[in-house]
Length: 246
Length: 161
Image 1 (cartoon, rainbow over the protein chains, first blue to last red):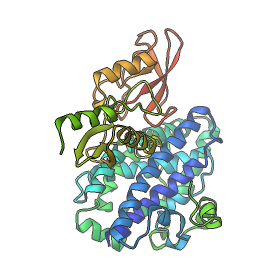
Image 2: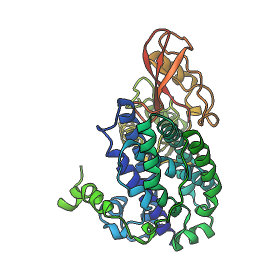
Image 3: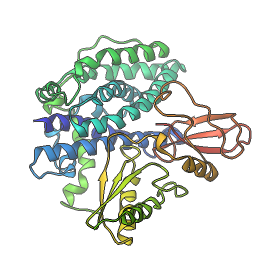
Image 4: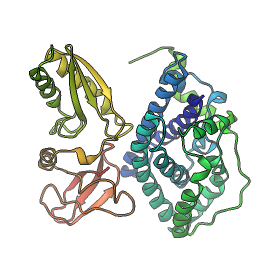
């Protein structure tokens, strides 16, 4: 059932990639208008390879496009964190830091995967994620330790998003099987590296880690209302014109 | 029958394909084209994408296929993920062509310094080392934006990965 564990991981990347792409044409400055879609492309590229591999392993004749465009929200298995609406720029940067601070060490560990394709994806993604951490980390520091307004917004972002971070370290039954087979790294083991990055950035940004009641459910297909709205837009073309290609 | 000549002909046909985003360099100079193997008239080209989501990947693969077909081979592409493409594979000639085109080539070897250290990037226009980073992300996934404080020109930097 490796394909299900890969689909979870692909869903994280596709959904966050799509969220970042929503900034295209709306970012606060030109450089960010280029940076955010660039990072979205990294994420969507990673998702595509994982979906393609999952579809091959599943052997049911589905394609990467079927997986992306023809599943409803209950079938999506992404983390709640990645589907959260963009909010303001502070929220988008914090969400990116939370995710990249996990994925960089995760992909680094996955370069020793027993699966050739996962190893290939990991080699590229671990390098790309290092750029994502740096970009998001610099912004979180600049805004958290910035003006009165930016500091309030960054602290609000932490209040809004921190409760979704616990789910990063939880493995579904499918993921656990893939972990036991050495295909994917154990998610719980990524915690120390994630904590170290967050402690470093939060320290420089003068931000406090809040006590939160963790929100989970994404891996079971239990999502926020926001995911349905996003899929409605993302999947519109394939729903309106089934099988359309260009 | 496969001759050494066929192998060489297939390689030179594929290797001459320019990169669609940076047409001053070829796919072989960028290290994207890894090898071409001819068996029974079928030429298989091993292609290593630069970034996971590089939108040029498909265009590059199609251009290589077209070049091999033009040279009389039945083309096939093998996409190679592992080992991952690195800027270390850009040839010395490729680096020089990038610089002449106005893009600063990757400074030094990849692997170290991606986090929290900025490399010294000489200006491709005037050669000064007094340059500063504008943004880690540029017009394509593989480039960053820099500016030269000596000649005041902005330029693209092909970042190390």
